Image (tube, rainbow, N blue to C red; front, side, top):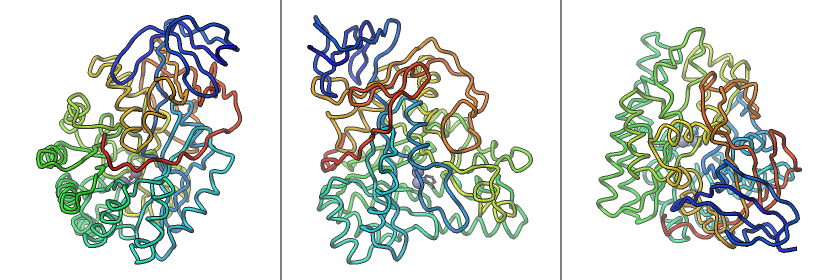
Length: 466
Ligand code: DUC
Ligand code: ZN
Ligand code: ZN
């Protein structure tokens, strides 16, 4: 037998080319592109379909501790099932070190949660909140050496944030051991000041979440994070960028030679701050940080996707149930926006939204779509060329898309553990129909066809940039 599986008659796209070719798969890897395929164990006919690298969503939160009384809506089973139905073959969640906790212990516990339950491959980012000598001197270097080569730090949230000194020392360890540093850029003191003022004025509904986290707070923190990375000389990822002022900081720092990967997310293209004003506390469904902005900022983010300022388009999937006293409508959250958990679901809708709004509406081409949703994630995080492309020798991680499928997004049809989608009722064209993970079909004809077979991928040092 020449191939275990052949995908025939499809239109293949990579980050650089679109072409007609059959794909031959053997032992979980791509063995042949084009030409006579010989004998095949199975043939999938992809006539009229796009054959794309499986999506890599390098920014998702799964089963992450979220404070007393609050619970994320997904475990690894539901989050990765949802990811798979949305055309992804890999996701990268965050392992959170809570203050006072050992990073190694946090990682061991987190790893146990995904055992035998992931439907797509996984890579872990490490969140450092407590940069003790043991964490920075032993635990972080050891985890990086083991192939977990990206670290996230927060400039906001009282329980998570580090001051500049903590960020600098964490960046220094990352630089010495070949890891990248992801930064959540919002100025906590600005937010705390504005939130206190809003509270005193009696502005406590979800809308105040957006007004107390203004563009200026994100812009200043973005500038500071880039400056710290410049001083340390470490590659930095600016995650979930929401506006043009922060984008300008990124462009300026790039001119100075800072090694930056820049990311935006669907919520900054499709949602607005005024969604947080929806009646009956429904605005809580849209509370995420940074908050969605306005039409002008949506256009700025689109421009950044089109012109290359952004490298990554990720979901920042961070699901909480709405109708739950452990979610958006927890007792404290119903009294004040300050206690509404931050985050929205989106791992299943990320790719169809960008395909429909970006590719089908002519804002980006198919190659750019592939770059923004798969290839650049693999390059940024030390996975390329094993992941993120269709090339001989790469893992056969493939999504077959039907560009003619028209769907109305309904939470009832999605597979995550939340009880709503912020995109309810949105019409999209194009949906991934078939998903293949390391050569094995995982989703066919709208059904999951394989047992959980996702594995944790150990990565090369990610310092080289895209
Ligand atoms: N930051 C994230 O990256 N995700 C969800 C919430 C947040 O603040
Ligand atoms: Zn963040
Ligand atoms: Zn996030």
